[in-house]
Length: 480
Image (cartoon, rainbow, N blue to C red; front, side, top):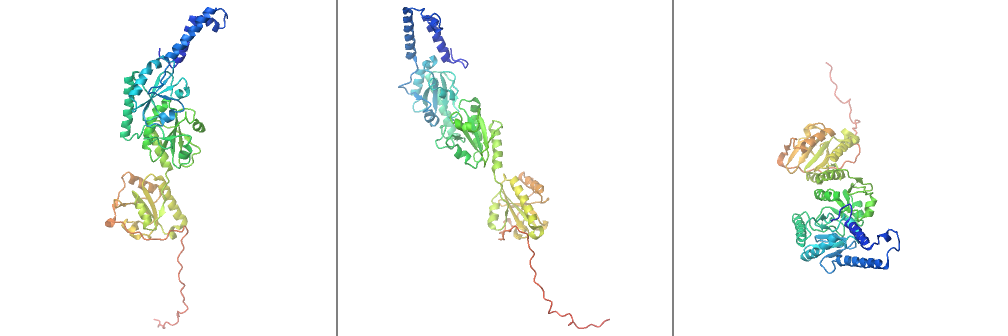
């Protein structure tokens, strides 16, 4: 019978062999420690002959791929030969004593010869290399794994055990990898890169003990890192969602993956006890990563990542409009927001700082929007004020300018945080009213001195000398 998860074929074989051997030789009495010496020399000879024949039969039928096109794989060469390879691999995990493995061997050799140069065919003696078998969840023999476009997530071969069926299954895997490359979803079938960075053709970055600190800890960018095991069923389910999310978040948040069964020191460093475990490394300080508790679909991960990216974006600085350069930089944005503040003598330094701080808080709130932010002292840029009708409303005043469309929108409501926020929100959803810029062009900006942050001072007035004026020289007038 085939092996089950409860009792491996190895155990079944050993039990049957032991019982058969004991029954035919009568040696079960000695093995149980009962009646030693009960068997005579003749019986002992029979036992020895039976044991010899049994071992000879096992040796004659043991799986042996030496001299064939099947590549022998071990823990020492599996990473370099399979995981880091550009080829598609189909790998058998076998035990030399396994009857089904012995039946499969000639078909496996034929398939390896037919696929030579197209798909690599390998074999792992999982009886000798139990750690490698355990890494990929091997519980029965033979187990066949297909290492396709994503080497970190091999699939189980479920086809027939004939050479033709094996070749067909391998070619299907190769076809799927080629289609993925053609569509841009997979640049290579390799499962990793030697120097770090994204695995060939995948947006997910392969992280190891060697590159983790450089790529993640020393980076100012946000990271989501999955710690997985290749044999883990939940990890396999997550893999396509993780890949899709990594592609959608590219340039915003980095998504990485650590094989925790290989890089155990790294997994232990972050207390990984189950798979998959996802850690959140925010932008900036990464010394205290948090556990990701969100959903496991691509949309859930993307939504979380976009919020991460937004939190890590620096708000644009609200600058004073002092020259043409500062204005040009602002109008390159989709909307340039310009506030015209009261004269320093009217507001004082404290009042002006309050205005600028309010504008900066709004810039932080709308930092995900393509807005530029400027402020100018009232009447310092009269040409600009004239074409956007600011003069008639007094100060403070605010307008948004679209240089591309030559449109502007003036703030009609209160110059307050809530008033400006409602005004900008209406514009972003297309509800705000806009006007055309007069003259169909923007004016040149006058160069002015930047504010020194101090209160204003009244200009000094010239003293008037009244000593030369005589009030007695006026002619006398007759009284009426």
